[in-house]
Amino acid sequence: MNFHAVKAIYRFEMARTWRTLFQSVVSPVISTSLYFVVFGSAIGSRIPQIEGVGYGSFIVPGLIMLSLLTQSVSNASFGIFFPKFTGTIYELLSAPLSFVEITLGYVGAAATKSILLGLIILATASLFVPLHIAHPFWMLAVLVLTAVTFSLFGFIIGVWADNFEKLQVIPLLVITPLVFLGGSFYSVSMLPPFWQTVSLANPVLYLVSGFRWSFYELADVSIAVSAAMIAGFLCACLAAVWWIFKTGYHVKN
Amino acid sequence: MTAPTAPLVAIAGLSKTYATGFRALMEVDLEIRRGEILALLGPNGAGKTTLISIICGIVTPSTGSVTVDGHDIITDYRITRSMIGLVPQELTTDAFETVWDTVSFSRGLFGRAPNPAHIEKVLKDLSLWDKKDNRIKELSGGMKRRVMIAKALSHEPTVLFLDEPTAGVDVSLRKNMWDLVRALRASGVTIILTTHYIEEAEAIADRIGIINKGRIVLVEATADLVQKLGKKQLILDLQHPLGSVPAALSAHRLELSADGAQLTYTYDAAMESTGIAALLRDLGEAGIHFRDLKTEQSSLEDIFVTLVKEPA
Ligand SMILES: Nc1ncnc2c1ncn2[C@@H]1O[C@H](COP(=O)(O)OP(=O)(O)OP(=O)(O)O)[C@@H](O)[C@H]1O
Ligand SMILES: [Mg+2]
Image (cartoon, rainbow over all chains, first blue to last red):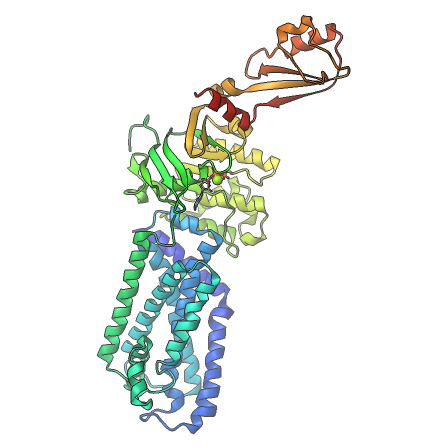
């Protein structure tokens, strides 16, 4: 195991984050604040409590998930796509590394950044609405596992994509709709029965539900099911990464 | 470690067929000796970059094997790659990182603990020390190429691959680059470089390998090759056209151009006596005056023609 390489990649990626501080931290904070102004205050004041929780507070876990998922995917995909695009990937390919180090470095950095971002949004939210975290340990666990899983997913997209369009199409066309339809801003129980069933096919529902449970003990599905689903995604992504490097797919000639 | 006389890099039966079906390398056998400078000479598309890329792990070989210091590049890739430094043909660098950061990054990537003293030495050797805190995008093309060399040297490799190191580098810098290459060789680094120019290979290499259409045509010590192929021509533009070469000059085996205005003398530049002095004296005595003269050396093209005509 080449730990120096993992560290080098990790530091390189984190340095990129600090350089692009505005884009990576400030803009998500601003957009989250806008959600609170619009949904929390303007609309939320007209929405009754959901199972005893004010609407503004209710949407906090979903909002964090929204940023966590989109940012994990876009960070990790960009991190590995960019060297392919500029050609600097030659150095990664010629270095004494296996896919384990490459993945650890890139995914580790992308996940770190998303986790920090999630915590910043949480802190921002606490300025707007009262927050209660019933299970801090589970809250952190879901946050970290989701960040890692979706950074892995983004990493896979970055390896697969051979142009900028492909790089952006998945986050835009898949992740964002799934998050919006996954109960980020509502409880699935508010939907008609048919759409409740359809929603169960949405993987993001399980993430949001589990995450919200750690705050308010409110969940659309049981926490055990959520935990199993997160573990399942994680394993699926790990298997995909392993397969990609095993076959040299889209990386080597 | 293998015996010190064993080749450092041994390539056997190496072939590469790209996904397009194109056969870029065919059954290449080549041994690179410890501590030598080997120049790979060949026209565009000959397979030089493909060969280097396979040894460095960027391209997967189709068949054949490569060992570096006795270790297989596929099964023992961690060992072989940590011994190798690569400066690729294309100028590909980061843009927003500083010179210092990007070179330190490379060292880490190749599994070495940080060593600021070594990075400092490399940057100083490459005249990049005053640029160490500059972002790479603020550098000129020649400086960027030196940054790529610095990156390749950051982890103290024993084998260095330079893929067309002088492309886009000005004349004085080119000299510096050759000095650096010689200094590296003196410190025990084995160097493989590619070039299109025989003059360049001649000036720097201990041995020259000629590669064409995916095959190694010949590998020979530079001195021997130059002697074999180093024919030079002296071309004289005459003041008055001649009808034929005067008998008094027949010993020089001159060739007269069709219009009678040019005389061509072919000689071996590597010989002690080129015969030029005698020729000029005889020309004077025969009363033949020339307006201008120039010399021409066999080009790579000529060498290929020669090699195809008389297989070495
Ligand atoms: N990824 C690829 N897919 C298909 N064919 C390729 C690929 N890379 C190189 N080739 C082909 O393989 C042949 C050898 O290319 P290579 O880059 O090794 O040549 P070279 O000797 O380095 O040439 P140059 O002097 O122009 O750099 C060329 O005909 C090229 O078109
Ligand atoms: Mg080339």
